[in-house]
Image (cartoon, rainbow, N blue to C red):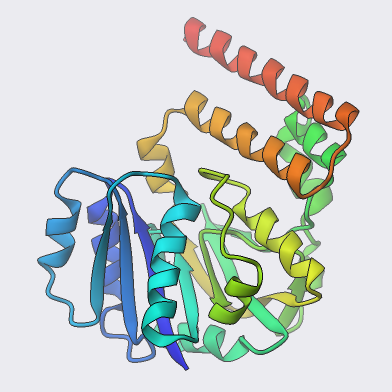
Length: 282
C-alpha cells in the first residue's frame, strides 16, 4: 500500500518548506503532494525549486478553502495509486521521526480508518473529542464559559488515553491519516465548509458507517499553534468563517431544529458584535 503525504499551502511557503525538509527522506512516504491554494506569491516556484524527487506541487487556480484543496490532492493520489494511505497535514506540523509516522500507518486497518497522534500545541496535548450536539455548540458560543466548554465537556479525560489506542469520535484536522477507501466511502471532504468543522463532519460520517477513529497514544507530533491560519486571517474574519461552518454542520449533519439553529445563530451574532466593539476600543 502506497503512503501519500498531502499538504495544503496558502501564502506560507517557508513553513511548508520546513515540513518538506522534515519528511523528504522518510522512506515510508512514497509521494508528497502539496496543493497550493492560489497563493500568487511565488510559493509554487519556491517549493518546486527544492527538487525533491517524490514531491509534486499542484497549483489551484482559486482558493475554495481547506477541504477543497485537500480533495484536489487526495483525488490526485487516488488517480495515481487507486488505493493508498493518505497522510493529511497542515504546513505547520513537525514530526519527530520516521518511526512515529510508520507506527501511525501500521495502525490503519479495515476498521481503524482514521488514525491520529497526540497533537502538542503550546506544550499542551490535544487529542480527540466528542462530536458536539446543537446545544453543545450553542453553549460554546456563549461569552461566559463558552471558550472552556470543549475542554470541560467534550474532550475525553486524560485517563482515557492510558492504552496504546483510544477510540474517539473525531480528531484534529491539522494532522491525521485516512485510508483512501474510507475517504471515498464518505464522499471526500465537504467543500461547503471553507475552513473549520471538517473534523466534526468526517467524524459523524465515520460514525454513521460504524468505522473507527483512533488516537495512537504512543506518537506525538507538534502543531506550531495554527501559525498559518493566524497569519493569514484576521480574528473577526476567522470567527465569521468558523460560525458559518458551525451553522452548516448543525443544519446539515446534526439535523438541528429551528429553535436550536436560532440559538446558535443569535449567540454567534452577539459574540461577533462584542468582538467588533472590543477591537474598536483597542
